[in-house]
Every structure is written in C-alpha cells, then in structure tokens.
Image (cartoon, rainbow, N blue to C red; front, side, top):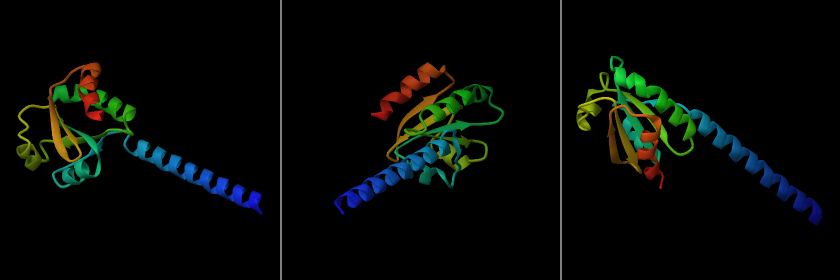
Length: 137
C-alpha cells in the first residue's frame, strides 16, 4: 500500500512539473516577440507584468526601423523576464502626450507599474542591454 501511495505522489509531482514547464514555455513563446500596445491596452500591460519596455515608434522613422531588430532579439532573449511592447506614436496620441514623447525611438521602462526609465535614440544592442539589465534586479 505504501509503495502505491508513494508512486502516486511521484506521478502527481511529475505531472505538475510537466504542466508548469509547458505553461512556462507557452509564456516564453508568447512574449518572445514584442506585443502591440495602444492607448487602451498600455495601462493593463504595464500593471500585469513586473518589467515592461515599451518601444515608442513610427513607420516613417528610420532610427525606429534600425532599433526594431534589436528589440526583437532582446524580446526573444529576455522573454521570461521582460515584456517588450510596441506603441505606434502616430496612432496613439493620448499616450504620446501623457509621456511627453518628443523624439523617437523612445523606450519607456516600467517596473511594477511605474515608469522607472526613459531611453531615447538608437544604439547598439550591447549599450541598450546594459541600460536594461539593472532593472532586472
């Protein structure tokens, strides 16, 4: 009897681990690329995630197109730690005005729902990453 109970306990534990691994994998896959945010979804996005980086951009902006692949790489590499979002400033004037976005690309960094940093301009991945890593602490 004890052996059966022990086997059942082990089976349940393993099943739980596999379920958690699958859930973690789905979360990583979901956030392995930037998510689109807008005036209506921004607040919900920054309050439901502990660390969020919002890329404020526009289609006509050449520096924005230059930094986009870097943002994509970082989103994939930090999918389990940082949620990256993209906000089109031309289509989301309310947020653009609220955060006084004067130059693009601008990255707004939110930690636990509060804006903790603003990074303006295009830069190499290494420099951008070095500015984001302290926020992981």
